[in-house]
Image 1 (tube, rainbow, N blue to C red):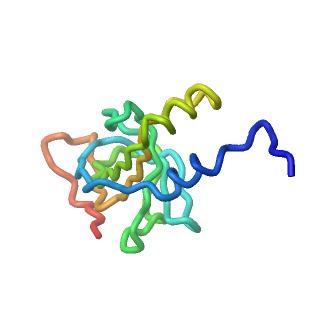
Image 2: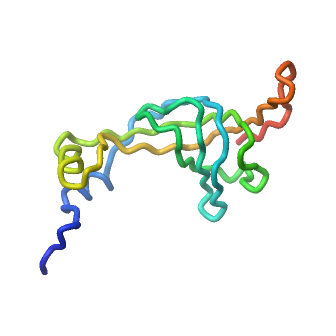
Image 3: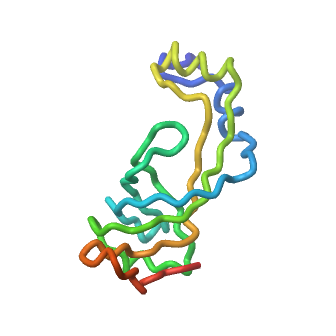
Length: 133
């Protein structure tokens, strides 16, 4: 069988699929929901501050205890989540950059733990809307 030019070698795929995640880092960042994927229990978020790799748009896994249907797009929330990081080897990072033009030295996974509505209309009073795990 002839390999296609776009194929990723098995050794790269193996490392990515078997990446070992480090101890999660707990984070709390404000932002808003961009998109909701109820069938996958995920949300896309726009964060006001970047995560470790510089991104401000991240997809988060949402636990079943948080009802995605109760969230609203464009409303400011405080997201409390875990950032899971699995570093990639220098060899894989260099391959991805040289062959695929992808700058990536780690795989990240974000797991939402709690979400709290921020009441921007009255900054002197905290919102009581708190949807927790």
